Image (cartoon, rainbow, N blue to C red; front, side, top):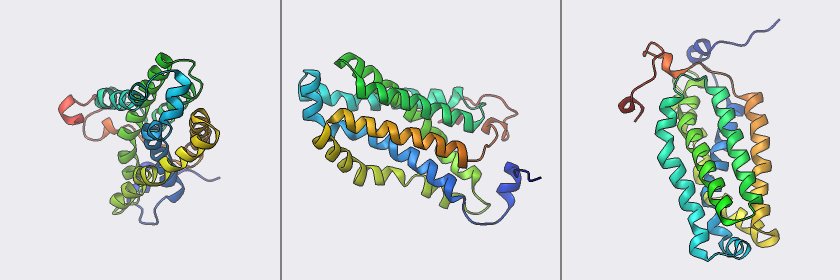
Length: 217
């Protein structure tokens, strides 16, 4: 009978990086970063479909960013005592629902609400990932693990947005967001299968108490 090594055993055991887990985290970063700026590449079609001007359609980027900026730190503090893996899976699941609602939004108001919710979920994902990558890495490889996990951001900006724009031009902006939802569903399964569970970060030197706002910042 085999047993799963504890977090402490993983952290003190030298060895190679946990590539499947780190690539799953990196893909989650890629998807959430891609979705933030994807409207910029499909703006004309989105504006025409929703019967609004390009400026109004562009606010779909603004509200996503606002959802992240306004809630990431409060949510990171509020969820500090929650085990990381269920929290990560939950945040990605909420993002999946919000992005799917964006793809099928019947009107402008629903689109903005969905985009705000997607930004909230993405902000929580980003708040979790760097620490998660550090904690699943072998001792001495924490920096490399964080670097791998965060490569999703530049890849999304340099490759993902042009690819999404191409999809939007060929089959419509809704299909582009639908493709992101399908990718997110796959990432949920990938995280569930390959990312090890880790304990609550509040247990590290805080006695399990919720950290204050200054410490969260």
